[in-house]
Image 1 (cartoon, helix red, strand yellow):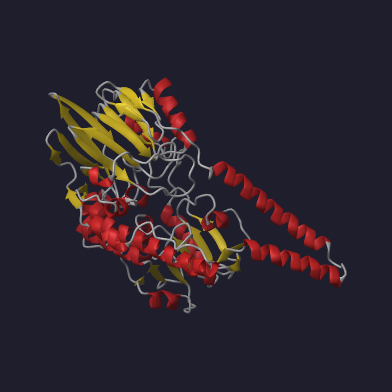
Image 2: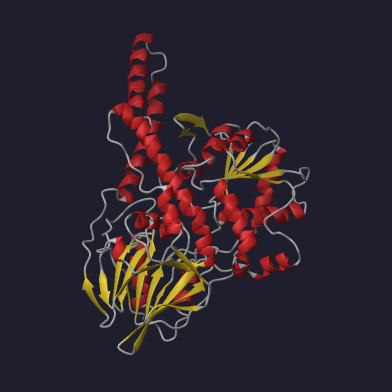
Length: 530
């Protein structure tokens, strides 16, 4: 019985693990790597067609995003996931494929003019459709024997609609071994979803560490904070633009806005409109309201049982077509626009920023994490201008953040989750966290909690029968190491300030010299403009 690691090792995204037992090869998650790439990942040693099954913890692209690539390369067996994960993947994998195809089309339009080779998408919509057909939905808490000697159980992880920790029981030579894959562990006491389910027995645990060493702090009054932002924006005659992740965060915003509307908390603007401008968010919201009851917390269930749709209210509009989306920014009355992507890197939100960032009466409200190097990160860090569709847009709007919202358990939540096991697992494999977080969380488990733990690297493998490492990954750092990128970009920002000072110091110089200086700057901009 062997467990190997191929993604989300000393990094947060790209989850991929492989269990070999009872003569079967079972992949757990096949996620897309997103954001900074710190370590090179080793590719799994088997062709997709050699895999016997895939288990999926939840629908987020960093866990599911390469399933269409598996299908494109010959995988034809079942993908086991919860009913709701299967439903969400039905829209999210198609959306991801559309993005791959759109990016390829855009690159090829530019590449043909430069005589470059054709760029092919990572996968296509047809590949996504092929993967979606392979899903085999499972109910929470039911035991499913997927092969003789191998059974799986999905338990609610409280992170996303349909998210699960997966308990795998392997029986070889008459001995049962339990391996738990945590998936992403949800935060407690959040709106809409139940708290994570705490398991109590496992021989081995593969555990995420996204927010190890970090505490979310006391939850703010989200409704009160959002009300303040709405009030001051509408009083200025402005529009509130919310860049939001289409699945999960958008539904939370609708939940808060319904309460604000119901209690008439925004004075003088009772009839304000809320427009969700994201086809993916619209479809996901339908799944939340029509199928998500088995994941609801008590408050959400009480609303539903009383006949209230917690994600709908008067003034809510859903924008699906491009024509509907374009029309939004021609309408001048105060309103709320919720649009994807949450970090402002793609999608319709970029159009809304282009039309609204430069107006001082407007507000851009960020409600999720903004990764290094993204447009969203630049805005929350105080950028005076950003480039959108090749055009420089001045940042005159108010930039605000709604703090404290996270779908992940913090350090205290992670400790609570692992301490629910009695006795402690034989070994904990710490994954899905930044390098420092994985290393430090592993040290604490070993030295302070007296729980045997290790943070594997990509390519590492363990013989679980002997509890011994039998394969060692090369541990190669990527050339795109995040700290280096961050440091160089910071240097560029400092040079930007210096350039402004140099330009100002040359005021009054002869026109001939100023023209020469301007031509040099223009040539530099033309060279580096994206």
